[in-house]
Image (cartoon, rainbow, N blue to C red; front, side, top):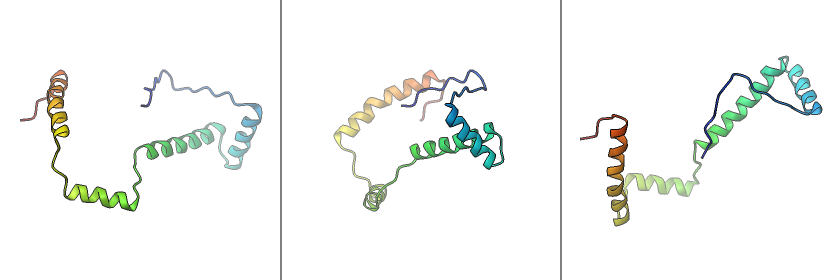
Amino acid sequence: MPRPVKDDSQRMALRPRAADKARLVRAAALKQTDLTKFVMRAALEAADEVIAASERVALSERDTQLMMTLLDDPPEPNARLLSAAKALRPRAVRLKRGRGEVEPA
């Protein structure tokens, strides 16, 4: 579970080793941009990749076919599922009342 982010300012402090900073400065110069823009662009691209990877599931061909079959023709709910759904209903209603939402009919 990701930790909540505490955003208390617009600044970020990085303390790279001298050799690492020199590499970043050189790369930024080669891209004809300043260090801040270079680092932000690279960091945001990496962040986008991490977020995208965490939000998708890759299935094999076999698993994709199984999923499609289950979606097209779902099995009947068993006793454990019915029991879990029954136990969850009162909790979901309590949560909705606490937020002031209207309960479904």
